[in-house]
Amino acid sequence: MLSDYCDNEHTDKNTRHSYLDLYESLFQGKKETATHVLEVGIGYPPYNGGSIKMWEKFFLNAQIYALDIIPITDVWADILHQHRIHIYAAINAYDPHVFKRLFLHKPVRFDILLDDGPHTLESMVAFITLYSRVMKPDGILVIEDVQSMDWIDVLRTHTPESLKPFIEVYDLREKKGRYDDIVFVINKTQKSLKT
Image (cartoon, rainbow, N blue to C red; front, top):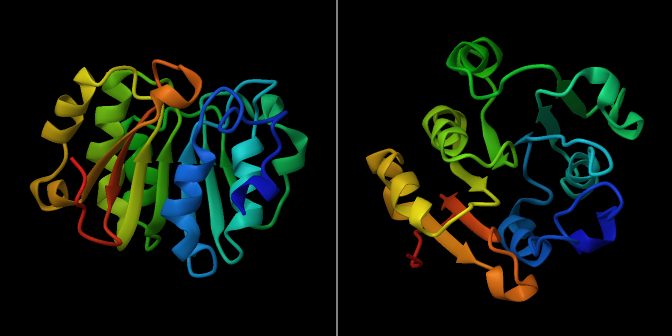
C-alpha cells in the first residue's frame, strides 16, 4: 500500500489532502515497471520531500526526478544523495528553456509526471504544455491541487488533441472539505471513461 511509504510529517498528500487512495489506484500497475517518475514541487518545510521519498520507496525500479524553486539547502536531507533520486533545486520547472535543457533533448521519457508546484493556472497549463511531451506512450500525467472546477476547461483546452481522450478529473473535495482537492489526470494506461 502506498500509505505504508508515506511520511505524513513531510508530505501533505495524506494529511491536508486526500490523494493516496487515488494514487494507489492510478499507479499500482506501474509499481514495478516504472523506470522514470518526475514531480515538480519538493515543497517548503515542514512538508518537504516526503512525496519524493514515498515515490522512491513505492516505485521499486524507478529513477525519481524532483524539481523545485527552493534552494538545495532547503531540501530535506533524507532525499539528498540517494542514488535513485535526482534533485533539480533553485530552478523554474515551468520555464521552457529549463525544460528543454533538462529533458526535451534527452533520451529519458516518464511513466509518471506530477505537478505539485505553485498551484496557479498558468503553471498548470505550462506543465501540460511542456511535460506531456516527455510522457511515455502509456504514461500518466497528474496535476493536483486544482484550485477550482472552472479551471478544468482551461486545462482541457491546453491539452494536446491526441491526449484529450485520456483526460480524467477527480473531485475529492468532499473527503476532507478542501476546496482544492481536485486532480486533473492524463491517463494513457487506458482510454478514459471519466469526464
